[in-house]
Length: 364
Image (cartoon, rainbow, N blue to C red; front, side):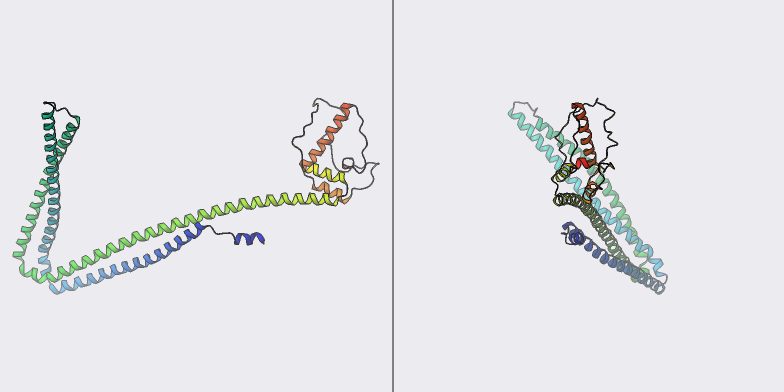
């Protein structure tokens, strides 16, 4: 219960709040833009339907005049296109002409500098800086001349096309005056409808781009939230594992201290502490080549009470609890101590002295 409360009261990662705000903002923006996009598409369809109906009504009303005057308006449309192309060609020609003039001016300045240098140095004109400047200016002049020639050709071509389109418009206007005047409402209405449809189409495309950007922001915020959540879960798992290890060690230490406190035998308390804390700096030198048929086998050593005629009393509950508290490493350490003690006594030729029944080693 306390762990759940601790997790609930844990301070929230500020990154989560930031990404949640981004997510909510992106969601609101997506909803708003999608509503506007649906409305824009509906308006486009409505304009298209209304325009088509209006064009059909004008076609029925004006009769054959629309069909006869159509070549004139198509010629005017082509004349407008050629006029725009001619304006662009004129701008390109002006830029090329200005660049050519600037390049020629640079060549003139470089030549003047070399001339002054020649006058001051007695005819020597081998200055690398001025030579480099002159070469660069000459290259720019050549490039500018090439660009101006191409711009001149383009300008002349566009001018000829515009003159031809204008002449065709004038010719059709003179031959179709009555039909042109009668069909003018049809073509004016058609131009207005086309302009409105183009504007609405541009708005739809803009809204589609904005919706895509908003969805990208939403996806980014969602991925960031998932990444932060994974980091928080990994951190909590590591912290919970550390807390569990600390709790286990604390419980084992408290249980050992409790056993020592409730046992009145000083030897038992000392034995428990020694079994719990093995000294890594204690070393025992033994002869590994020593062997004796009477040596106690490590595998057969046991700390459990032996059923001997000398000991008929069963182990006390405290002793049983002590045996259950011992780990495998502690049992192995105690068995190794008993084996080493037997080996040392046989090497020294000393008989083992019977221990007191109160000693833990004698009992086990």
